[in-house]
Length: 536
Image (cartoon, rainbow, N blue to C red; front, side, top):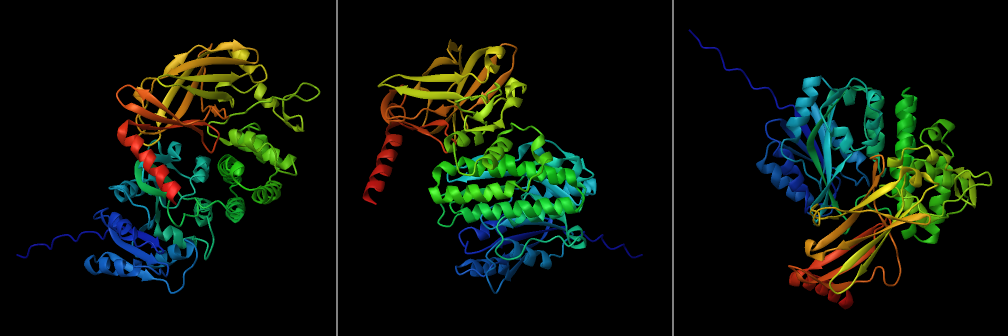
C-alpha cells in the first residue's frame, strides 16, 4: 500500500517592490526588511533606477545569496518614483503586492498583518499605520492615525471618505489582479507626488478596503540628507506647482469615476493639509517665491466651487484659502502662519465690519468670520501668547489668553494648564501645572514657574490646555513673543544638572519651544557645535 504524498505548501502570496536610486547606503537594509517578513513573502523585486553609485553591485551580491530577490536595473533614470514602481509591478508573480522605498523599512510582521486583513475580508486593498521616524533622533510620528485606530472593513471607499487623506501607497497591500484588471499604474517619468494619482486611481475603482491598527511601514525622514526627498524639498515653488497638479489630477480621477463625495473630500484634504503646510512656511521664503506661490494658489483655488467652501467655512484651511482668493498680493503672512499651525491660532487684531460682523481684517472685510460666533469653544482657534523670563536660578512663563469676539468671556476661562514635552523622547518635564488666569481687559494673564531640574537635554515643546467653566477644554500651542530679551539664550542653575543652557525660540509655526543642554555633556555639545559653525 502506497502512502499519500505530503500536501504541497502553498506558494507565498506577497511580493514587495523596492525602488531606489543612488541609495547604496540604505537599499539593502530596505530589501532585508522585506525578506525578514518571513514565509509570506514570495519575492522581493528590487528595481534600480539606473543608479551611478554602488547600489547595483550591492543588490546583485544580495540576490546571489537570496533566491527570493529579483534585481531589475533600468537603463535610463526616470527622474521619479512612478516608473520604477511600474517596472517592478510588471515583474510581480505573487497575488498580492506591496511597495517599499529604498530609504525606509518594513517593521516585523507588516506583511502578515496586512495579508490576514486582506484575506479575512476578501479585500482588494489592506492598509495599516505608517510612522514617520525622524532621524537621527528617532522620534516617531504616526501618519493619519485616526484611519488606523482599529480593525475595520469598508465595502466601498465612500463609506470612509477620510481614506483620501492617506495618499501613501507604501503602507498598503494590493491584490495584483485588481491593479491589473483596472489598469491602475503610477504616472510615468518625472512626476512628483505620483502616489496622489495612484491612490486616486485605486479608490476610483471602488475596492473593498480593510484597515488594521498595526504598524506596517516606517518612513525615514532625513532632513539633514544631502539629497532631500520630494516631500521635504519644498524650497522652490516648482514643488508647490507639482503638488497642486497632482491634487488636481486626483480630484479629476475621483470625480470622473462618479464618486463626488470622495472628490469633495480630496479638495477638503488639499485645504486642510497641503495649503496649511505650505502657508506655514511662507514667512521663510523670499519675496519672489511668495508672489509666485500666491498667484499660483489663487489660480488653483479659483477652480473650487461653492460647495467646496460651504462646509465649516472657518476651518483653518478654508479660511486661508478664502484669504488668498480675496487678496491679489501676499499679506498677513505671520498671522497666516499661526492660523496654519496645529492646533490653529487666530492672532489679534480681531476686526469687525461696519455692521459689527467679525471679519479677517479691516483690509479684507469680505472674508467673514461670523461662524466663529456659533462654533463650540473647544474647537475655536484660541490665541495664547507665551514669554519666558529666565534668571540665574528661576524662570517664569508668562501667558496671555486673548478674547475672541466675546466668546471666551461667555465660556469663562478657569484654568491654564502647562505641559513641556521633549520632542526627541516624548517624556514630559514633570506633571502638568495648572494656574487660574486673571482677567486683564481684553485678555487673561497667568504666570507659571518653570523648574529646569525636570528638563533634560533636548528640544521641549510647550502645550497649553485651556479649561472653561462648563467643563470644555481646548489644547493649544502658544505663540512665541519675540524681542531682544524674550528669545535670548541663558545659562541657569538646575537642580541635579548643575549648569543648564536654555534657548527659547519660535518654531516654524510660530510656537514657543525651548532647546535645553543640561549637565556638563549637554553644555559641551553646544559649545562644540558653536565652534564648528564658527570654524566653517
